[in-house]
Image (cartoon, rainbow, N blue to C red; front, side, top):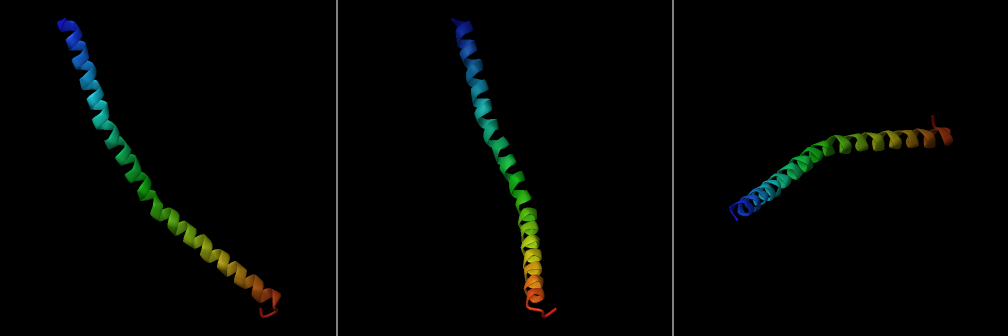
Length: 66
């Protein structure tokens, strides 16, 4: 009987360890992913600005103002 209790104890501790570590791993992953967002937003803003400039130049060229 003590062997069975020892095995249950070990499995319980292992399960608790996994349950305590997994949220930390997930939190670290999400924080790292969140740190990448500002550079993505900045890059998107630059692309929008360049597309607006190109569109303006095309319109001016089509109207013969340039």
